[in-house]
Image: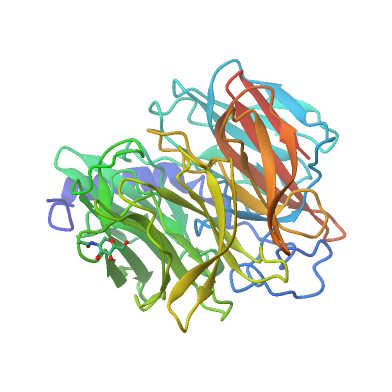
Length: 466
Ligand SMILES: *[C@@H]1O[C@H](CO)[C@@H](O)[C@H](O)[C@H]1NC(C)=O
């Protein structure tokens, strides 16, 4: 068993060494400026947007994740320029672009990091005029299949954040005062924090491919991960048959050590089927909730919303045995700005985009609109991020952006309007989508925020709408 007991002298030394090597790269806490409202491009007019959407600084994030936000909520702010007629910038990467992450460069341009299917990485800078140049991003190679996080945007030194014994199928997560990662050694996986003068191991065993979330508002004094791996639910569509039996939330104490503030066990025979929960304000009360997919062999997957006290606030209906649902963005998707949880039901079969509203009295997630024919995941992969929410066409309404299920050769914008969910428009990709959908929200001197979107396709072309 891994844990503080086994995090002996050698481990601490390794942590200290890797902390020193990544220390330079941890300039992500460059001042964050920009729009504080998810939708409004001029930063005025509050709107019903919930904590973490309205108050959290949404633009000019200096860390690039494959899932838009540090808290796992795949939603991006600002106004985009996509619609059926828009012309994207194109970059040929000469390989299969598996992962794509972006950050602002600090001078109006964007920096994009790409991981190819064989683990080689590449970096590009795209100016506001659409001029593309290569940039050096270290390391130039990662383990095959490994997702990445890009730090040092906003004028820092952009690079992929890595640790020396980091688990193969995940990446470290930057915190306010250090880095938390899933470490992988001969005796299994463990959570480890490497920080300024305080290194720490944890007893809770993480899912080996867990993506560790942080609450963007407190700049990473808390982190959350799926823990307690189990093979008791033999579904195995997310790259392996290991799922999680719990969610742990750790909070930093004075002095720098973390303690477990919350543990949510999956009830009965259930598992949490995913790589991370989504940490978002579902009921618009200013506190974050935790949204996750629960599943078991008799009833299949349902979506559950928990409070930060671990109480169940609402659940959807289950879909049926060995059927999955991928929780996507949470935000004001409703026709009147109601906060909704979006998921994709059976992304390998019907690909139904579902919009749910939380009914706290009935403790239910109520399905309010749906539209089939899309996907957010290719079966047997660990890329659950073929989906994003945002105002991609700049019209003031939110869309869910994701590929069509039949060919994955288009990105479609699905919107919840009065009367139901519709496809507002789609753009051609030229080849099936290969990567996650990546976004960067850029603010200009007038505090307007532009939503830039990138997608990598299986013909080796990355398209960027800016
Ligand atoms: C399986 O899930 C259903 C709801 O989806 C739940 O009612 C049931 O208790 C679960 N079964 C077990 C054995 O945990």
